[in-house]
Length: 335
Image (cartoon, rainbow, N blue to C red; front, side, top):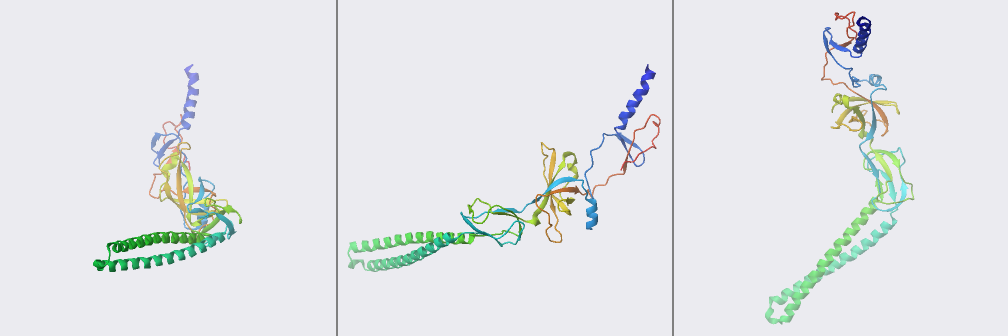
């Protein structure tokens, strides 16, 4: 009975052994048996020419999303009506270029009234300064020869000086308030013109001219194409293959473009649900010019191999069969 079962048992052992390859060195010595390794990190060797780079970046790698770090939604600084819009989606704008303008006629009228009121307050302030000087001068004369004046006159002179000083202080406070109001209206009149805060591209338009907008209403969104980064996730078991400063190759199929980048940050924790590590790499510019990659595009990322890491040559061999159990020269290399 044992003779009938033994061949089948040997077959089972051989089948199990085939699923667990043995790694040996290039000199043919057998190392310890290990489980099937995790697929290696997709890598590439950086090259200088664009043709070689494009050839190395295929449809494999990690999926990522292109993100613009410098992005802003422009909103008005006061409530009003959008009088005009000077840009459209896709327009390139320079820093300080006009984007939109609010209807500022009511602000201009309020400013004219405030400036007139300020001039009146300044004139009143000048009059009170003169009044205080007269009161101070009269009090000084009376107190210089007090024996010639009654006590009531000296006290009246003191009181007149105190009243003049109090009026002047009130005038100074009123004058400061009117100047602040005038300055505020001038700023509002200037802020009626909305300008680009940096060189960028108009990515979205939210309202049309004639719309009533508030300070919380975005008008357009501007992004900077020179601040593009690629964010991608790496499986937990491959996280050791990425590091800050490592080169990456990025391919965006939607615009048929290949670009280089450098890893700038690696999140120091693993996402508990996805078991992934989020990595962020900055895309390099093309001779100082921004690359025409749309923010939000899906890209594939390949991480360069660590130039400081050198592994010994290794091959994967089949475990010895019953016919070659004592042989160590039958090796099968797997590329």
